[in-house]
Structure formats: C-alpha cells, structure tokens
Length: 303
Image (cartoon, rainbow, N blue to C red; front, side):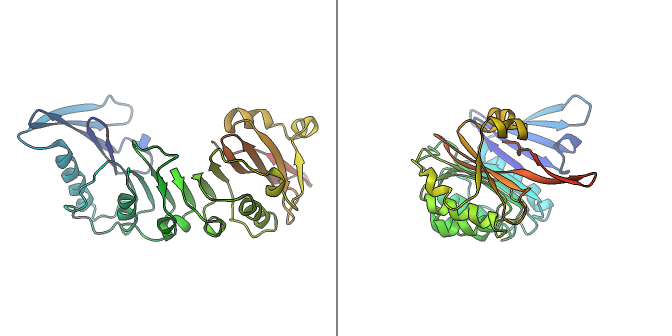
C-alpha cells in the first residue's frame, strides 16, 4: 500500500508484487472548499485506466484519505507485505494501526524523527528493506539520531536507504547487516571505512555485498581508508582489462577509483570511489568459470 501527499493525497492499493500486473487501484483525495473530491483510478493491464469521481460533503481530504487507507489495511488484516507512506503529520493519535506483522518492506517520508520511530515500531524487527527520507526538510541537515538507527529494523535489514543525514557511530556502521546501503554520512571516520573494507577483504564482511554509499563532502584521507589493503589503481591497463570503467563512471559518477581484492578469493573485488560527493564502495569484481578457466568479470549494480 502506498500513501503519497502533494497538493492531494494519493492512496494506492496493490494486490500483486509486480506493479505492471494491473492488480491495483488508486484514489486521489483533493480538497474542494469544504468538501473532498475523490477520483478513483483503476489500472488494468493493456487497457486504458478507468476513472470515476465523487464528492464527500463537509470533510477534510487528508482525514478521509487516511480513513480509506486504514480501512483497506484492516480488510487485509494488516498483513501488508509492503507499505509506503509519504505524508507529514500522519494522525498517529487517531490511528487504528497496531502492527503490520508480515511487512517486509517499508518506505516512509516525513520531516520529524518521531514519525520514523512510530512507523518502525509497527513492523517486525526482521524486514527486507527500509527507506526513510525527508519531504521538505534539508536532507543534509535533518539527522536521524544514533538511538533510532540502533533499531533492529535498520541494523538488520538487507537493504537500507536513508535520504537524510544519519548519525551512525563507527561501531554501528560496522555491524550493519545491509548488503545495499546508502545514507548521508555524519560521523563515520576514515578508520571506520578502512575497517569496513578490511572485514570484507578477510571474508568477514556482509554476505552478498552490493554497495555502501556514504554521501557527504567531508574531507577524506585516502591513505587511511586504504591502509594495509591490496588495491590497483584504475589506470589505462586496468580499464582495458576490466572493460566496464566508462559505464561505471557514467552511471555511478567520477572520482578517484581503485580496485580492492579479496584475500579469500582474488577473483572477487570491490571498487572504492572517493569524490567530492562522498565515499562509495561497490562489489564489482565477480568470479566466473568457463571451459575450465577461472577469471574475473566486472559489473556494477544500478545506481
């Protein structure tokens, strides 16, 4: 289920994991003076959307949208697999929601920490992905505090995206379980980044690592981040051998890149990218075997 606020509120109820299945409908709630207009849009695969409209007299569009969304949550016995709420001032004091016991993915947009905290308390400790971000606040100023980041929903998820600053300590950063991670970095120091990479190099990092993106313009000590690591600069010889550097830079950005190799399997490697926008670590070198030969194939996740 998705609830999205702009000048109106859009509530999307989806019955299939694939958005393209057409098994969904949307209601758009808008304020017309003292009344609420509801536009109903049903999406059917390979057919034009079917639209209807109605007016509710003397009521607030925001409240009616929340009532409708929670009505469908109740119909589903709150057993939603995914929930996406992008709203300021969700009426937490009036809600009927107690928990979403089967939720695997949560995406929340808000401009205050307590809203994030409230939603996290409604989902299981073990979830697959979490996305938290601000709506109107400055994402480089608004900061999620360390105590909230310690929530198991954040520390133990496999995919964590925080579109705002996050006050992770080095210890928290090193204990994150996410194989796909992105946030605006506040306090992670160069030694912490070095240790994060060293753990992967020694086979003690996050399994099936994809990437860790630490946004921010903090000055970095490249020598400290790569201390005691075996790496190779992206020179002309490497670029010709790997055959992916141009595509990588076009998609993931330009900066100072090196390839860092695993001590457990030298055919596996990471790319460390340091730029004015932050520090990025990607799992790019992958072991392949073909016709009795073993070699590295280089690729990168969609950025």
